Length: 184
Image 1 (cartoon, rainbow, N blue to C red):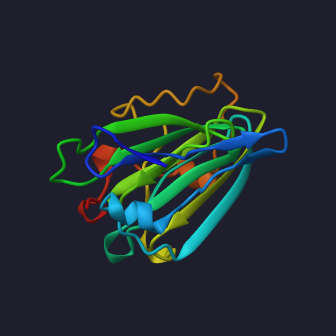
Image 2 (cartoon, one colour; image 1 turned 180 degrees about the horizontal axis):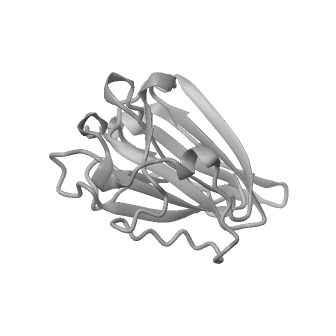
Image 3 (spheres, helix red, strand yellow; image 1 turned 90 degrees about the horizontal axis):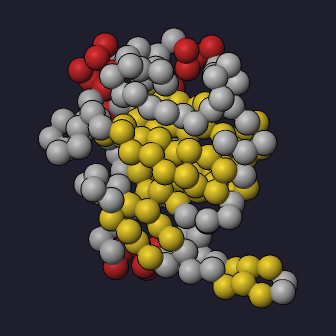
């Protein structure tokens, strides 16, 4: 397993060592000892899984305050564009966007620390996503940023007119209009 540090502090890509043969493949999706050796100490308490069709955009979501969550995101099948926005005031990448493709084929995971908004778009006909969280979901602490925020200029790589967004996600404010308690 390789832990690859990005230019965003504490945001890392996890690239597993895949062992394949005529039967298929095997890899360790998570190894606590290897994470801790890399200085990544998390107590995962909740797993979430979703299935979505092409064009679905989920996000950008986060939990505020003491309920903020770190996430270890993996695409089990299909292809997604994973997107995060740094909401940490003292970070050199504050208010910046990081994107990467996760897929059932590349088997990579993105470790998103607390203090980020997270979302993804589905680039394949269908995709299944699994992510671990280090804090339980708390409805009163949920927040979000509008996926089409012009300040962020995110290219979700979805053909125009094919976006599928929940009514709830369409109601999120832009980054410029987020309340102060949404920043970490």
